[in-house]
Image (tube, rainbow, N blue to C red; front, top):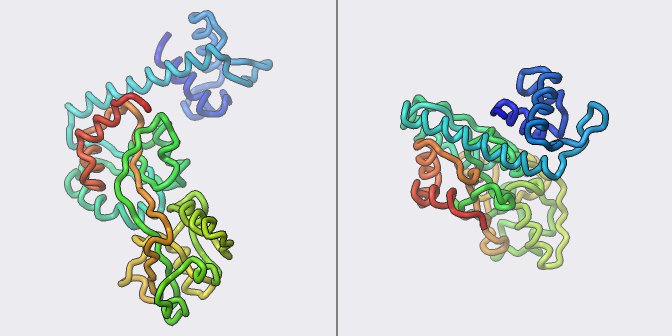
Length: 309
């Protein structure tokens, strides 16, 4: 048994049981992977995969147990490399943050600026996607930290920690009738076409829940994953917008007006997520603390190594 065989096993599982895709991802040959997996099965005395001819169709029950252990061993091996890098070159390396558009565009810029100034030798990568995609990137080891508002807490393999709460607001063109209202209500908002986030993004579930609680059916004419797209179509007069309050910047959004929504929508919580028992470099802890000052290294480390609930 060797780590190469474990990597082949893990990559086949990651690639939907397609050996050809695993071979391409690992820059090796399909027959070479097949041979090593057969050798591993012979050594263990079990079949890891269910086969139909040369095609793998499923993972056997003992195979699932082997895969689980293999993934832990590969994870620990990566942690060992991180330990060596930490003590060999404390202020150089790479850090990959997987996040949504709203966080990358509006919440992270000052943090990134401070981080790059403090760690000029660290290569910082930002990967954007929806909450499900960025959670999977962390699980697959493609990103070190995920930052998003929704879905992250659904993964038992991830440790999630709250960063901050934020609220939605309504945006309208200048002189819109809603600007004359003394008290904004969901009933008044529902009278107009609405442009807001796609369901998977930026607290959209809180928006839906608020209208449902009042037995209202909002006329949502357009959805987007990008707050800038929402603002563009509101400027065109296609409807009013509901978006994260942090995404409205008065000095930039001069052709729009913002209306605070008070308690109409429940506040949303942005969270970070890290793989459980991950070894983070010192600068990764510092990045987290820059983004959420209450998440000190001690707090994050304790959470990562606590037993899963």
